[in-house]
Image (cartoon, rainbow, N blue to C red; front, side, top):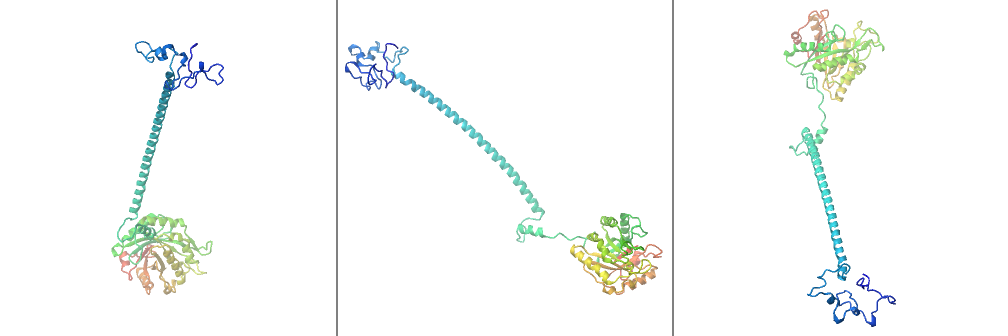
Length: 436
């Protein structure tokens, strides 16, 4: 306030005007009192002290012993102690606020870390669940594969990888015949329908392969009581001798492969054998057989050769009786035997027709090949007596062949149709019987 001298601060006493050193010099050359006398607070100079030796604190103290600190000071008369404590209070408040802010920030950080930890834990649990399910699925698949492939420890000391390797390298079982097994003859009796599709032959007359299959099955059952299992069959003429030379001048014509496919399909449905029969005219047997090679891949399909319709360069069908050399027949049997071995097929029927000895002039040179059931079929027709005589001539010196016998159903060919009982009385007993 005006007229009142105050210290602005502990270290800044008021300056006298005109002081060369910037500080107040007391009058009379007196030095300012020591600053240590009032605990660091700077008091007024001694010249301002009232007489009687009272100090300013004694002068201001009211009667009754009340101290100056106990009285309420008027506004604007704060002591130096009050001025020093105010910044301290403010600093304490600021420090408390700072601490609160730091604590709050730490709490926020802690909560964020907790949230992150919970998310990471949930992610780990989810991943563990997914991998657990995946592991269970893989283990289940492995177990199924092991059981399906005959896995397991087993006996014999073989390890699982060795057993699996053995299973992988194990070859597929070879093909079987339509009614099981891999051998036709000996051990069975074959009963067949023979014919050309679209003629009066028993096979192909109706142009209905299923009806023909049912018919031959009925005929085969008539031979079931004679001891050996019976296999019904079709013998389908596939290359037909013709009175016309045709495109290649062979006097023969091949059957459409679709016709062969229809009869093969019926044979499969009824579990029959199918023999493809060839009448090459002036041609050769082997090229005609190879023409239908794709059908030979079937385990049920065999081959029949008819030398009666194998003609010389100047001969014509129905005018001359044909013949075939052992070499031409052996060429076909060699091809078939190799074909069977290559494709691991069961035994195939290989039929050679003959009703006169002139048809096979060097029959003794015909070879019996592995993989083939080679049948010498007697095709004689006429009365029972004539047929029996033809049968004796054909089968003489034919012990290395399986024997076949044909029964003609037209009375113009066989006036009397022989019964299964009569056929079975033949000696040697036929293993292959065909009906035409």
